[in-house]
Image 1: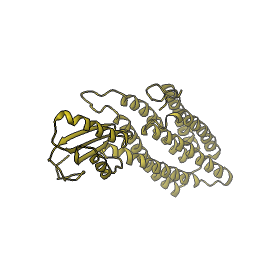
Image 2: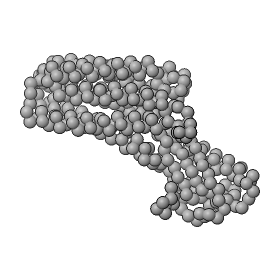
Image 3: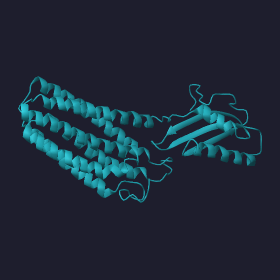
Image 4: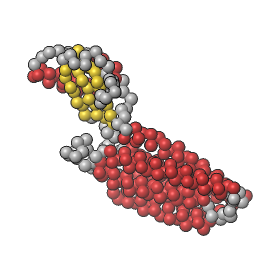
Length: 305
């Protein structure tokens, strides 16, 4: 991340002033949509208010978690605090899925027993929400590449803007044709869209929290390492994601019988390959002579980790 980006602090965190501005905007939108939804009778507005409330919480979580993630490594957290971002993104996406389920249930109930809706008020509130969401998206845009948590928050803001567009469309139809059934239909569509948008975040953050590895060609790694003079075998590799950017890797290598002082240059070559070609942020190498030679690079005997 370039440090001359005025939207970012020197440590790569989105500016606190921008986060504060976006949070205030979302709180205003949330309050306006809750009040507008109650007085207009629009479930679509109330559903979008819940979505905006989730986004407001997400923005605060994103900023706090991002700050925590930059704490240095210590004896308690030897890999640092980068998972704070991942946990915040995971919890936020789970909350949105639950809210979507609730809104769909309420919308189905509303379809079976339609109620009067003030289309004009619904339209006005949705237009206010649309403008505020576009302003929020503009304020957050500079940090979308920083990490998964901030990108998730930015996407939620954009989805809010699309939700507002859908509500505006529904409000126009209610005004013109008095089609009150449009309101719960829009609610269901918005909820489904939010759910679809949230699922990839749950899948990716859940995978990281489960210590998953990114797509890696282990056989290619083995071939590359065995090309290094002195390396006669590679086995028992483990890779796991700390966050969406940082991958930790450990591997056992069989070396020719040699002095320990001769091993260090080989370690340096292995490190160079694994970090420059495969972009692992931290590498641990265990050298052996014959132990494990010929075993698979991914080896599982039921208890080995």
